[in-house]
Length: 78
Image (tube, rainbow, N blue to C red; front, side, top):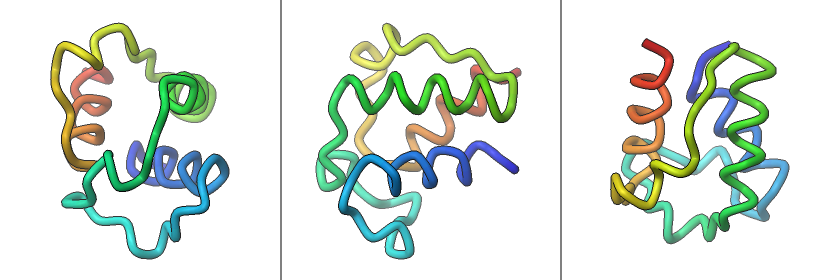
């Protein structure tokens, strides 16, 4: 399992968004994620991949697409 799969699965569980249509260019604003959704993503990444992301950094980095979120999470893994 990878970062993209974990995040996509969480989005599928938390929203009505069709995850089959998600791409790296999908706008986060179109998915309508709220702060608690990011906490759920944080918990899933820690549980599934051992990646600890700092959700407090998210407002600072101005994520606009799902690809931005993937990249942020992969960079936190390093």
